[in-house]
Image 1 (tube, rainbow over the protein chains, first blue to last red):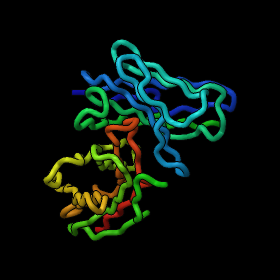
Image 2: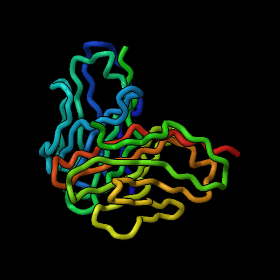
Image 3: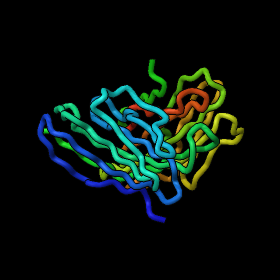
Image 4: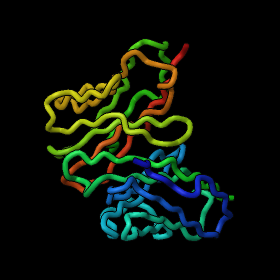
Length: 116
Length: 115
């Protein structure tokens, strides 16, 4: 079974631009979460989607948004990029709703975003 | 207050030795899950092991075991017979089932296995 895939793997943007990152979960997984990882802040939760609905959101400004499609694929968008948005963005999928039993999240390889 | 504390920023261990990575957590919930992930330099987070708060037995997965001490709110990862490929960042994480279900990660421990 294929793992979580993320595209693109690397991205360079300039301040003020916007970016869209894509995540395809493991086949059969319906929950997708996004995380931002930086050396200073570590791993921070962005949001989680299940059945095309956002279930949870972390403490990030409205410039960060996401969506999930009917096939469970998810995208996240960052508008008006800032230098501080440079990070590794990780996507994780799990089988079903979180909070029910063991909901192990399986991560993709991440998208490394550099904002100049 | 930090929910997940990993007190060891870095560790150096000789190959073939066992290693314990510390993790303490803070929650008032009775129902929660604890996870350990490994992150090699490539960046991908690899799931290692899971422990549920109601599980009475310590979780084990191959060379990985989780030393779960509920009263002390401790969930240490034990790697037996370490290998060079174990060199990576290790993250402890928790999900509180009855709260907002967000998974919270510790700051991580960088493990170096020496030949």
